[in-house]
Figure 1 (cartoon, helix red, strand yellow):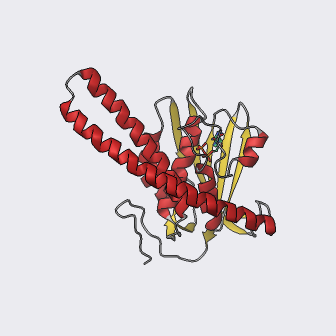
Figure 2 (cartoon, rainbow, N blue to C red):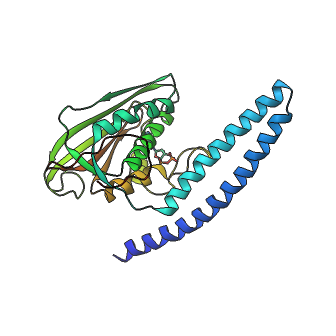
Figure 3 (tube, rainbow, N blue to C red):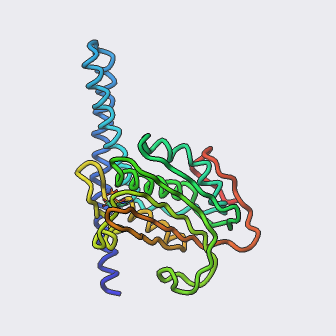
Length: 257
Ligand code: ADP
């Protein structure tokens, strides 16, 4: 219990530090971005415009990284509602496809018989995107991503410490580099990354894991170096006729109905 307390204090301090740095860094990025806007209006040569464009892309990437750091630091409460996971995935499909390039194929196999889950839709989509981006990064020479959903009944402790019951299982499998056993063990630790500086924060999987466990589920990683990685997310199935909300991107601030 003491070790867990120490761990959570450490995370809290880390969160404050990262939050502060990310916030100030974001401000600096916006100064750079508006400076670039001014430069664009003055730039004449094609080479200048190209340079400005690549600087803008670098700023966008920096902003995406600081966004990840900020949401780690904030640890927002969940806005959970009843959803059909299949419809969430289908409506998010175009965003997922935009994250991968032509050398990677993505197939989505949704089980027709799927239970409802109580979930924060925006956070779930962020989790899916994280997994797809990780899969993409593990396949620099291209490959295949398979996403699937399935209802599954678990015995007590069959998966982690999950109690017996019905679960919705969402699996994302890639044909990428895979991970050595050491990395599998550490993958959900905050700041564990094997990516080069500026490409990864090491916060993706730790956020996904935190979100899934906070939602009453669990996340399991299976990986074989040279063959690929499979990430399974289990979410508790809602048994009764819950009022299902339709997937959609109209608003970020969902209200419970
Ligand atoms: P980041 O992507 O910023 O590095 P993550 O927490 O999402 O942070 O991932 C941590 C590490 O886990 C990655 O740097 C990588 O080494 C490993 N990893 C995650 N997903 C995969 C995957 N699909 N294939 C291979 N390695 C992975």
